[in-house]
Amino acid sequence: MAEEMNFNKQDSKYYITLDKDEYINKSLLLIANNEKIKSGWINGIGAIYDIEIGYFDINKKDYVKRKFNEHYELLSLSGNISVKEEKKFVHTHITFSGTDYKVIGGHLFDAKIAAAGEFLIDSSDSEIKREYNRDIGLHLWCMKNNES
Image (tube, rainbow, N blue to C red):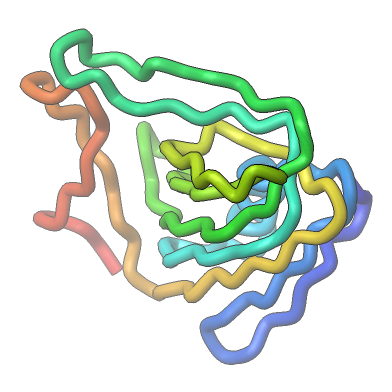
C-alpha cells in the first residue's frame, strides 16, 4: 500500500484514488481510521484483480468464498463504514466483469487495483454500530442506542 493515501475531502465527502496493487477494503479502512470517520457510504469503480468474494449461506451461517485472479473491470462497488466489536468495519459488495462481459458479484473480502480505482466515501457524524445476531449469524446494524 502506498505510504500516503491519495484523497481529497470536500465537506462530508472523501474522493479517493487507489493506485495499482493497493487493496480496496484495507485502504478504505485505513482512511476511515486516519480520518476518524464515524460512519459512511462507499461507492467505487475501477479495474481489479486478486479478488476474493463470497455469499452468505444462511443455513451454515458462514460465507462461501471464491477467488478470481485475472484482471476484471470493477463495474460497481457499494458498501458502508460502521463499528463492529469496537473497531471500524468496512463492508462492501461488488460486481465485476471479464473479457466475456459476464457479470460476477458478491460480498467483497478484498481485491487489488489493477490499473485505477476511484472511490467515494460520503461520511456522517453519526456512528453506526453492529451487533451480533445469533439467529442470522452476522453482525448487523443496530440503530437503537447509537451515539452521535
